[in-house]
Image (cartoon, rainbow, N blue to C red; front, side):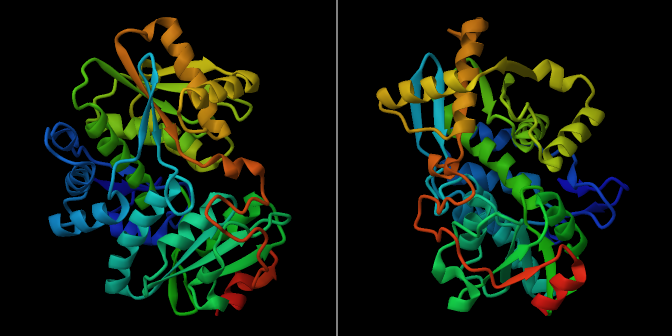
Length: 394
């Protein structure tokens, strides 16, 4: 599998991940017809084995089997805990990592890819919006990697929270914090402008959720989880997507295209809509729909949900001995329950993701569940301007 931009330019995984965004506009999307079914159907493989086989199958042009195994052991070492919620629903908890979110495995996989790229082309600076669990996940992923550094940008009014103090450059780590006098859209545009440039002796890679390595990690995680959960189970499998997460839907769609044998995707409608506000999710879903017209309509089952129902289902799950869900995952649980009521009960299993510790629902000032700083002092404050960014980083 390779990656194509909106102008038709094609790059391998290492090159695309080293940029994060195409030079012109838009997003990288997968290209090719790799097949992950052998990894999914290997009866005696572990979670890490399935992940390694998936990586090798997807990226044979860029990753040899030894590197695939190293990446799998780094980012997918053990299967996330799962909880049988009853009636065919299984909650998969991917929030146990250092940031308390599924971004940990994505960021770790990307850091492994970029470390290999840096050994070939020189040091790489990861650049990302640090809001929420993103900053915490990325800061842990680059810890101990000499070839990589990380700069986190924070929109105006958003505290620099979640990163542990020892990860900061001023404390001997590799992470710098910059406050930007602009909103999230301005921060995203600044990251796009910087991607692929050389600043302060390092090549800049946009490291947000749309980075091709992070998107690939979502597909690998789906394949490895499916391989684990299908053992001893027959019948139809459906995958739930967290409310308002378009990039999660896009990952499921491409995983299906690459051979993941799911019967459908359960989508919940929340106040964020179906795809959410982030442009990368909408862009990748739109690209898939343009390439495979009608497929989304045949795979997606949309279920409405409201906040009261989501909170009630979350509390009922805790009473059963299950994990406490964050808000978006609670909406996904309600959608799964309603899909069963609508006719799937008795012959289907639905995977519901728990992708973030509910501590992150506290808001912008959350320190996260793993001892991060609540409101760290920024190393600099800038206008959303590339020259100013280059000035403080050079």
